[in-house]
Length: 121
Image 1: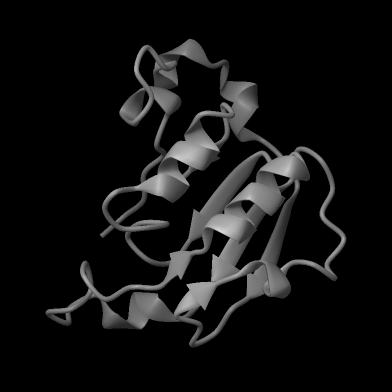
Image 2 (image 1 turned 120 degrees about the vertical axis):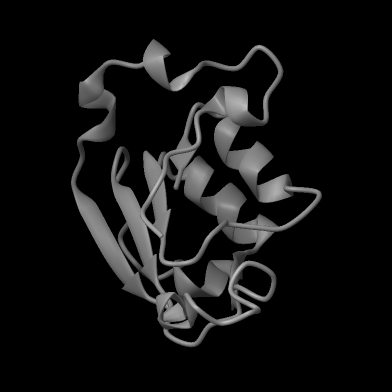
């Protein structure tokens, strides 16, 4: 399927476009968190992990193995609101996931990340 980056303008009115950021914005140290077989990535998963400001957090769930299944885009894991707020408070730079979206309608998690000029992909 590939990958993508959501810029703030994707969900936030008058939000920045991807071209509004210098390329260096997308370079950072990264931390991969094993969330294998997790349906809801909640704050408990990241509470005891040292999260440094401007780090990219990657969540591995294994959902990518379902790419050709009929439920791939509809039954994927999500990040909880509490977890998203915690990551923003910690100054995380970007979020990476192995599933198609960090949430589902009404896209609260997108809005939490993107309203803080954070990115998710």
